Image (cartoon, rainbow, N blue to C red):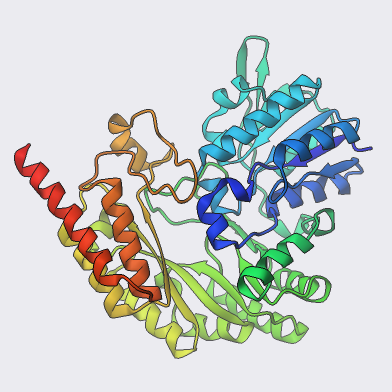
Length: 457
């Protein structure tokens, strides 16, 4: 009989794109919070709604335990949580209302809750954990007076009170490892094997990103960056290798291997411990130097995803991305030299982008020939410069319903249909497949329609 129930609102089957991809990962931040509570001696249960019916499973968890607190703790290391999708928000709201119906306080944590405190409390949450979660949730679970808990926003009679911000922790090695044993790993393994023939597990070595891209929302860690020691990260890899036997690892860091020295230490520790597991990661083009790439290869890296964003230097400058287009090509060459797959994130629709900029991006993709791409459109989230630039243009729809939405929520050069067609054409070109001619014809037809409408206006 647990005192505290920790859960999240990412139900895979509410997202069309995730059903198609079928690359599910355990909720790392949720599991870290469970581990912190357990370490403090608090009886804690976990409900994971990733695969099963969220409503049925949540109700059963409420019946099974004598709870005094429910924490809907999103995975801060999952891009789906960072996108603040409305399907996830609606499930979180339902959980809060259900907990309240049973007389149980519910706390919310995540990017969306931090951005929309009043709405979450209005939906039934008693409190919102703003910023970094672990210590705030622990103090809440230990019944510390709410007014004395940094990082907490809470309902006080007819108003919402916001306490002082929570100071970020710098020593990540002091945290317990995620409570992997609290979750059923086998459905994750089964879905990966059925769809892809291999099992990929997730891990994280750092928090945050120090770069200044002006469309990137940072409600949890701001512009700060902290990392575990390289040896601790290698030890966790070894633990996963021995205990769960994944075929591959996905490092879910916003920026993995930011420091060249850390990367060298990491490669040495992995080799010394015999912890090698093939892995993929996210980084920046300007960090993929020859020496760093060589160290990553020694550690087992097979795939790197980089935010190329655009082939237009003008657009990159407007985004304050801090890279030059030639660095995209250099990173591609350095990774190819060591047999590491180079994959690009692309972003269209940024304010001021026109067809000539789009053409430069298409040309960059064709010249650099990345092994894979992910395509999106500029997504204005609260707290970003992009949001401030387009705020006056936003209507009722300010979040995507799911990750396949790809909707323009402000006035771009082209329509959402155009950008969806562009994404499809680029995916077919990079990944191969039938219908490439028809896909580009659709792009050109939608572009022509937009140009005609602009001429009439």
